[in-house]
Image (cartoon, rainbow, N blue to C red):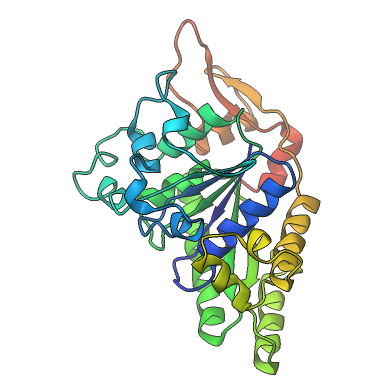
Length: 307
């Protein structure tokens, strides 16, 4: 399951709008898509017309539940449209990562979302995670569960200045997680003005080739769609806003390289693969019944991962 973490610690950059509409486009293309709201503000539910007062179970409840056959997936998900399901959040999600919270006390507290998605991986083709606007256990869980990170950056002066800091922060998070995670920058809330075009050029120059060749323009239609609880492809089909997100998803599919099968690394393994597996934390305790203690990419992909 290809999984995107939509991340930016700056508010007002279009993170939730990007999450909702990228997921909706994938669903319309016939791909089974899961949208996960890891932000306690619960904006994904609001943007898709899900009443927060009717949410009985949220994504945090699923994360701290036993990850086995007893977990009822349907009780945590809302079917929004055909092929699109939402795992919503509520304000209660913030309590999980607070000191003494349920998530804080778990030994695998930064891997709970990853474990959950492994259970659901056969049910979905794409997953989009709307990350919270802060660095904590919810963000760590999101990045560890993701296969790629998307960073919406508004083409405004202060956003551009902060983009470099954002990129360094995310690089530091990825380094701590210890796995390769491709990052793409999505120019968002782009206004048609000489200054905005100049700032977009600066963004492309600073971060090429990570910057998407398409931009998400500042459309009033997007705000109207959110207020009606609909993705823009439903609210305003054939609009410019819809075409922006269609172009973004088309680009994401064009650049996609499916991951190669992983190589098993046993406790007695030696060589570069074993060394890298240890470095990224792929090893767990071995048992007599299961001597395989880690898995890592084939040798030909190790250099590309830049570990």
